[in-house]
Image (cartoon, rainbow, N blue to C red; front, top):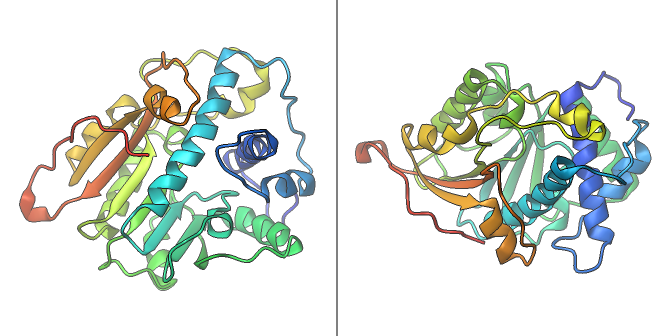
Length: 282
């Protein structure tokens, strides 16, 4: 992947995710269609590990990526909010491939090299967004990303759907808490949030082909993500991976307890938000 600026190791993992989306899109009975994922791979100059001979963890990560893509697609499209923010958007192409309702405004935040590469590839593909899309170059570990988002036109007084896909595991617990605290300050009541739940216990690396990904993991808030959100003004729902996968016709075991969280921002005067029953929303 070429760029006017060097890419971080975490940013390069966006290619691995694009590879999963490209493979799923080309398969029969795909859960989604990303017509641009293969173009990112073709345009990159990064070596892509072979897909063959994946170990159990690698296969589980591929399946989780497929399921989460479709799950988040559904969450975003069925949200009542017409303002959407994708944090660490990477090579996400939802602005281009989903049938957004009229009036949707979507903001994508990521590091400048990622957004530059993405813009170059999508321009070469003559891709046109299907909503009002704004790319916001920003470092989510800095203290300025919120200001950059507001300067780009984001309205903090409007309910917003936030997506934090595949990010928190690359952050420390403190970094994840700081990011979500800033997000919470920008989230008006009735805003919605979707993100991964986090893993229970220690993950064992079983295949060198994904070491470039798992070696970067710092754990985020782990299995305590929902509890943290509930203590900070969000009403949460838990969506175990196995239940969501079964809903989409891809049954799987879930030994690590992974899954997804959707959350609703409640007014401050309601106090402790609590945790809603475990209901799978697809």
